[in-house]
Amino acid sequence: MKNRIITISREFGSGGRTIGKMTAQMLSIPCYDSELIQEIARESGFTENYIKDADEISPAGFLGSAFASRTFGPTNEDYIWEIQRKVILDLAQKESCVIVGRCADYILKDTADCLTAFIHADLEFREKRIVSVYGERTETPGQRIRKKDKRRSAYYRFYTDTNWGYAENYHISLDSGKIGIERCAEILRLLY
Amino acid sequence: MKNRIITISREFGSGGRTIGKMTAQMLSIPCYDSELIQEIARESGFTENYIKDADEISPAGFLGSAFASRTFGPTNEDYIWEIQRKVILDLAQKESCVIVGRCADYILKDTADCLTAFIHADLEFREKRIVSVYGERTETPGQRIRKKDKRRSAYYRFYTDTNWGYAENYHISLDSGKIGIERCAEILRLLY
Image (cartoon, rainbow over all chains, first blue to last red; front, side, top):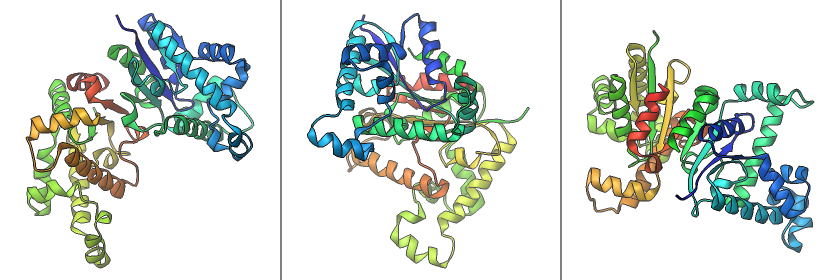
């Protein structure tokens, strides 16, 4: 049987990663999130921390990067993008799984049997959630969310040339604040 | 118990209306679509055909309307919008139901216990579907879809000041082409 993949894009603090892990557990298939970062780090030679941050940096978004590196060829981010593409395509070839983030929906678009999901929630829900999951920071929860989402959105836009969070780019979009994290996972399981 | 409402926004040809009717039937609650048009027509004094077209005409979208009528006060569309608002608010007060189109999601935003859904599908699925449901026309299916969606989107944008089809505006968005019309209805029933 052909492998089947669930990809999850998510707003920061919406619980998308947790939903991915729950869905994978229900289906007894692996969920790739930080494991993916390890693999990309291994293949690229960059550190895991560098890879972790790279999916929020679009080369077009930073003048420094655009002018300093891009005029002389591909940036580090472009190089990581290529490795990431290869790692995700290999994974989809190897086994059925859930993949969180990293534009997997776009990368697997025409090659794999995918269910693509986008998880979002209102600001109030996400603000509460990031404080309880990641703890307090100097920045307010609202500032942290705006910064993260802005970067994820720019990164997605730069590498996929489509809009992050636009319903028609995903098979299913769910408001985890309204629907509840467990029920979101349950729905994804049903649709698998 | 407080009434519970499911609102359905939909791309033209995605089967959103059919999904609304199926969901309502599964839940044994009424579904308002053309019935809503009749009610708005009755309250406003306009014909049903006029009302039917009005949810695709945003006053800002037509220079004729913007310059000829708007400078002298509210347009017919603004008047119909007010009646529509009232009819939808009254409905939500009266009973649990499914409401298709007419910006019901926005109108009921802060007043009712709503589940707001957006139904979309890729162009190929919708082109086939509109020909089988509504028959052939002089315009190609693609032209008909682009025209309808553009108008619905402009209307939604004008009266709600938010973007039609943007995932975060809905609790759930579903690709009916990928998921299937019956399964979409089944998911909405589950979430009710």
